[in-house]
Each structure stands twice: as structure tokens, then as C-alpha cells.
Image 1 (tube, helix red, strand yellow):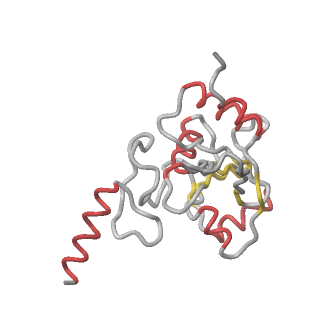
Image 2: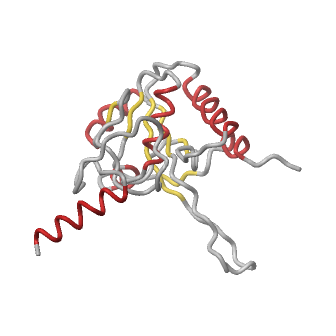
Length: 192
């Protein structure tokens, strides 16, 4: 029974294509480029060119005022939601985080990727050595991909916090945040 369960967990991990940094049943290697599989699933324990942070590491970095990039996808209005009821989802994140919903998606249209890099350049004041922390949810490839994009763009102090919002809120308060207006404007489909 135990052998069958271990084999099933290993097979599941291989099918998902990723492994979590903390309690993964499998060890997932980093892909060569951006990860193109399902957004949620086990992630690697590393991100080449970046530093992986645990909670203590993030707490230690915060006095330096890094740019905190939350790339959690925005909630979608459920199908069949009554038209006469307000849709008011609230996203909670790390205090002072900038929420760029979907910035870790793959593929990301070239215009959106340019908008992402332009927004990060504005947030860092053009300083490619400014500390930047990417995060979303545990076992989410979005923040890994966002970090990978920043490393590829020449940012030298990229940090990835794979524990995400939930890993933060286990010991700290969160804050309600709205999507970054400049990101939303740049990400909007062009008018026809």
C-alpha cells in the first residue's frame, strides 16, 4: 500500500511538471526558459539568476524597501453571477506590494511583456540593481516566470518568494490592494 501511494505521488508530480520548494514529493528541475504548463503545480526549489526567499529571508530584506511584485491572477466573475448584484472581490497581499495581475502568465503578448518591463523600470527608477521580490500563491509558476523575465531583462537582484501571500499571512497582516492602474491600462485590449 505504501509503495503504491509513493509511486502514485511520484507519477502525479511528474504529470504536473513541477515540485514545490518545501514539501514536494518530487524534485522538479528548472525549465530552460519560461514555464509553459499549468499555472498551479509543484515548482522548482531554485530560480537561476535569482535568490529564493523563505519567510525569514523576506523579513530580513524588507527594511531595504524592495519592489514587491504580486502577480496573482485577478478573480473572475463567476458565470451566472446576478447582473443586479455588485461584484466586489478583494485581493489581499503583502503591505506595499504592487499588484500586476497575470504578469507571470505564459504566453504573455509582446505588448504586455513590454508593459511589464516598463512598469518594473518605473517602479525601480530604472535601477536594475534595485531589489525586486516576485510572489503570488504557493505552488504557482506565475511568480517564478515573472522572476525569470526580470533576470532575462538584466535585473541583478531578483528575489522569488514561493510561499506567496499565504506564506506571508501565516505570521503577518496583509493589506487589501487594487490592481496597479498603469498595468491595467497597459494590459487593456486595444479599442476597435
